[in-house]
Amino acid sequence: MPKKDKLTVIDLFAGSGGLGLGLEMAGFTPIYVNEIDPHARETYLINRDHQHPLLRSTYNSDDIRAVVGRHGNLTDLLDGLRRDYRLPPRDPVDLIVGGPPCQGFSTVGLRRTFKADKQSVPSNHLFMHMVRFIRKVRPRAFIFENVVGLIGARWTKAGTKGEVFEDVLASFKSIPDYSVKYKLVYSKDYGIPQNRPRVLIIGFRSDVFEGKSPSLDALEGGFLPKPARNYPNLVDVLGDLVAPDFQYGGRTTCYPSAPRSEFQERMRTDARPNQVFQRVRLHEHEYSFHTDRTQAKFRYMLANSGRIHDAHKTKKFRQRVLPKTWEEPRGPTITITSLPDDFVHYEQPRSLTVRECARIQTFPDWYRFVGPRTTGGVRRAGDPRDADFRRTLPRYTQVANAVPVDLAAVIGKHIARILRASK
Image (cartoon, rainbow, N blue to C red; front, side, top):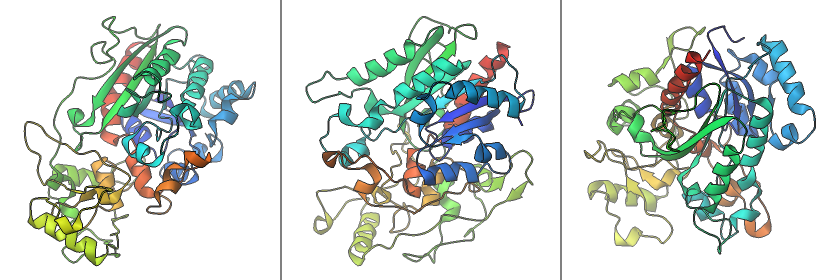
């Protein structure tokens, strides 16, 4: 049940819950979650069953089209939220957030969605359902997030570069009585151990906040906090997970060493409100079963500053060895992907585990992921050539698709201050 000093949030296209978790850390209480993939939705719910049981029992949905497509559904939803969460009749929802599926615009998605026009991929139009949801619910603020590829995307091959983002932005700006701004944010600028750009469109209801300037730039307008480049090195993120006796195809279930940095200490501690403050066990630290050829390739790369031997080169992908420490002043240069073999561990001849990817996404170690570890490319992104837009979200993909938790927390705290100041 939300406390009086808590703010409420509805999480659309929630995925595994990275954005949601960061907002919870910033003081928001989730009261409704929408996610179509059963594995990602279960990941979201299983990590919130203790603190937010109403999400599982009543206030979760799979297909947003069913929620906004039937007359009266959103009215009934709002009435139920007011009743069951004991929310005020006026402004029961403080914030709506959402990151509609983006495989049609992402770099990895372009590998997998082949040559279909963006206009023909149904998931590329889901942002309109979020717009309709906001129009009806009238939250005090909203956040739309997506991949950097959205900025320059065309609806068709003959289209104009950037036309997709122009349509998306115009759709959110068309919502009456909201001040709307946007920004391309780089996660490293907010203390995240990776570069990971995200496009954010942020809106405040006009009676809440109109911004500090007329600029559409969300940072200039005061919709976002000022960056602070206090990111940790990867050795400070992953160093305590390095098991000298690891085995390909095996797993490590106990921490190989004590925490060696403040970041590791925080990741290993469950400090959620109303929970017993405790250290957690190590989960999702399973190693891929690499072939002898791949093992030899990775060993050579580690011994030769990341260079790939000519005998190991392929046309498909070029793996990179992760740097133990970042080169300054450039800082983090990587963006975590759903393809675990894209990166080689900085110290061991292997790809990253799900837990290591989750650490880079700043998920705490108590956060569990549900579903298969990974799956094939077509099953992960569908095949538009055959009008097959079904996807599965294994654990690697759930982690990769998420907004970094700490990024969401920093932004959430800033938005929470604005919302509380307007009450």
